[in-house]
Image (cartoon, rainbow, N blue to C red; front, side, top):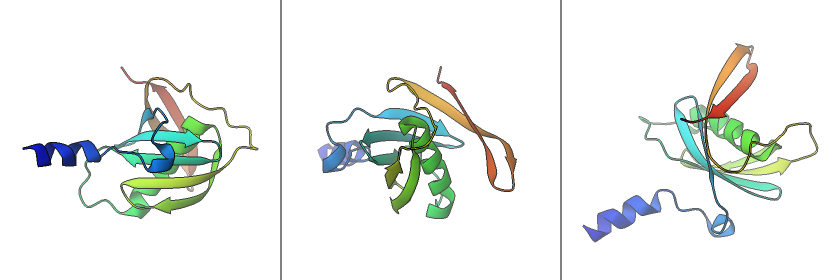
Length: 123
């Protein structure tokens, strides 16, 4: 039983560089992430189970979550379907979400791959 509990606790454990940073929980589409930002780097850990997720399907939601929380553009992305790491460019006009709380986000007005990310506090 202790082994199972340890495995469950490990699902949301940040990497060593993000260990002391409090996450912001944010949902984008059907994915929920804990996002941690450290200067020009960010980590998004996907919390929701998804059937056979592909990086190509999860990455846009992860990038949207990172950009909403950090207020910066994700310029370089690395990782896999569960944990995404991003290098950030914070020179743009994005405004970060407040660092406390949980958010639900949806894409609206999607046209030719572009759209608006609308985030509201989760209830």
